[in-house]
Length: 429
Image 1 (cartoon, one colour):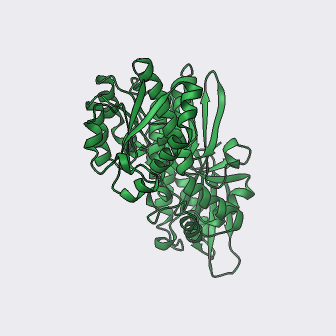
Image 2 (image 1 turned 60 degrees about the horizontal axis):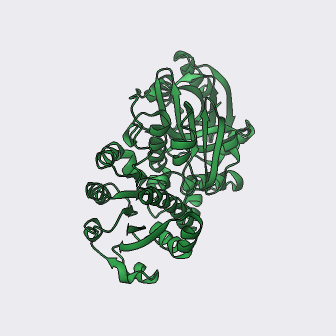
Image 3 (image 1 turned 90 degrees about the vertical axis):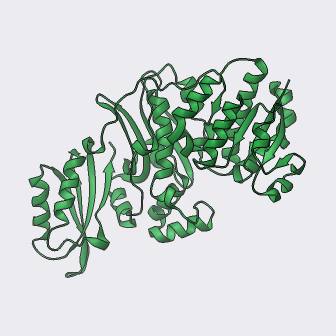
């Protein structure tokens, strides 16, 4: 039996999938007994189809794929949550299996999509939506299914990891690191999704839903990006035995699920501390397996297309064998989400203040008023009369109390607010 594919989207990842099919088609048949055929390709860009030699099966109307009774699997690689959702829902309604790399779609509409897939007895596979070429969703749905997963920590955005690495190792400013990332093709012209943490938030919403068997959506993830991070923060972290990473964090707690994305100080001894450049890594802790880490390139044509085609071949195997979908939606526990204000951790806070007497004492008094215990305080600056950095590191404290401290400190005379917003980095133990 030949399993026929319809591919929608011939951008970076879509083109990579075409290349893999053309290069390894015979290998799939010889090694695994899987016969696949790319039956139709849809794109807004005919030139991309021509460049990959698929002009004979090209269409600009995705309905041609949906309505083609011979196509078994639809591969959605157009991105976004509007046209992509329509495409995926129509494909499932037509009884076709779907493979997607669309993290935003699965993080916002995953429940609706998986319910329809279950109703239609179709598969929805989305390995490439998190971590690019790193296998993580399939291991969590299969290899680790006997565990109670308690923690998922991830460096899941290559753009911000590259920028933070350059800032830490070469004392590069945020703006210069961003320009270099864009020049290297690691960052988009509009980097908002990356640098403000939304890309990572979509990915941790997906991982948390799988890890804890409870639906988490993108809008439920507390999210902060890296715009406020400066080389001085990275230097201070290093001096204290830490590095700074944009972490996607999900924890199972006695009160529910704690899910968030923000810059985090990690001990240099932590396995994630050595993950630099554009590489991603996801650290998973289960009650039986213990600590595990999945590491690799998180983006790009090759890694993402590798994950997509892995899903395609697995679904094709099921189609050939005539088996029903193996593992669908497992979000049956409906655990509550712990509000961010209830978080308890240690904090690094940097204020920019005037270098004059009384400012340090006044700020320290605010910490005491809100019951926040200070572990250390350092003033960084050399010239009297100039503004200086006033860096506090706290003992364990609650988020709501830290926010109250920052609000009151910023009202003090001598504390430069406005263009000098405080930098807050949570410290992971």
